[in-house]
Image (cartoon, rainbow, N blue to C red; front, side, top):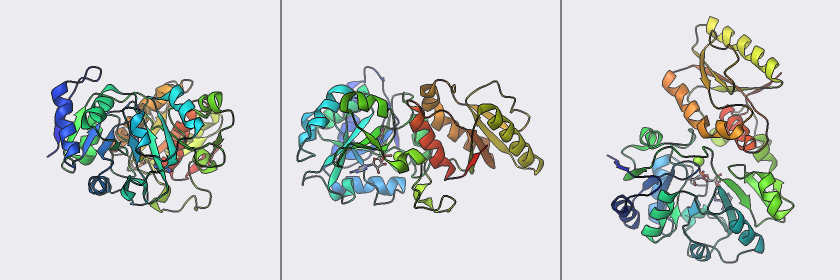
Length: 349
Ligand code: TXA
Ligand code: MG
């Protein structure tokens, strides 16, 4: 069984951190809180330990993993060179939800990079994560601590639900804060390009760098070369167990379309879930309603988005209708996750 180690999120107890760090040093897997979501950590310099992450999550082996550091010096052992832009960004946003893709150094095992010539690095802004990495004395490779394809975990309970018995331990430091993953920024391309929107917005990045591109697939939520309605798992991420339909358009039109579709499904005897960001719409007669934050404040939606998606699993719904929100600020990351959860099933009204 997996050790459940409670820890104070602000002043983590030494004993708890040392126990978890020892597991990492011995090649084991430890889940830990970060300011974005819970990560599933292994010693990044131990290829065999990193390989166990893929096994525990059921993660496709061609998907590389982010390496977490506690101090800047650790970046130098992971990457050969260090563009000036990287230093500016570290000064501005580290520790924090920004992952930088940089040229990889030879000593980083291929399991981490999936054989690429680059490595993704970030310094998380969480006392427990920082204490764990510092005490282990090694950089820590960590994807989100969920079964591959499912919503990322924002609590130790989510981690245990997915991975109990498959990993050595989870450090339980309470709920994660931001709620969606870090922004992944590639600094090895011609111009800096956002590969995954996240906690740091393109607007934030432009204030430091000037020009920053957003990968079109990241903005769309899926690769337009893939067939949007294909059942293939390739771009189905963050998905609840029931199919999710994302309804987009003007708020009033969206609300009435959701009511129409939800009532139709209900009449056919199906249990319907409705994901909304406003408690004013009267959806309750058509299905199980989950209100996830407030539409005008995207950071409140980000904070509870994944637990809302997991809530629909607990409710055992057959289908979910979700509204969207404006792609401003962290709203861009929220919409990216919702589009992926919908697997391309978007209804425009
Ligand atoms: O907030 C986060 O980033 C969380 C916490 C635990 O730090 N981690 C996380 O990891 O979300 P994961 O594995 O779920 O997502 C990592 C993302 C993937 O989209 C992966 O393809 C990308 O980073 N990535 C990793 N290494 C890369 C590389 N060398 N080049 C391009 N993309 C890379
Ligand atoms: Mg993930």
